[in-house]
Length: 91
Image (cartoon, rainbow, N blue to C red; front, side, top):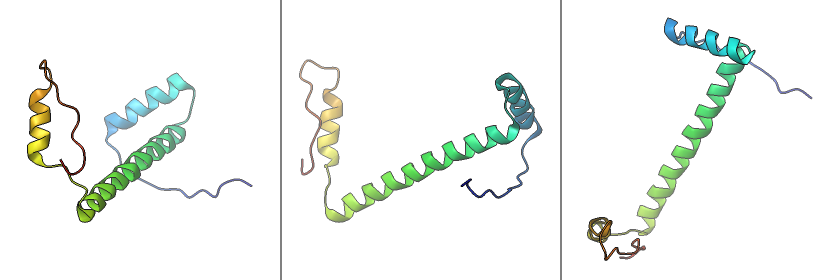
């Protein structure tokens, strides 16, 4: 069974639509195909970003932290002969 579709209308800058027209011609695809691919990619990235932010907030709430001092010591050691290992939770 085919996935249900719904039409969405959006106003876009003329130069962006012109670029889409060019890309559609080069790919032998429709603008609709390009827009769908772009929205799917954007949504996946935005949802993953939100998930990672929530995971970070959950870590803070649970006390799973690395001190700023430990991060600074590690960062300052990068590129030296005595590079430190990446700090761990509790450092």
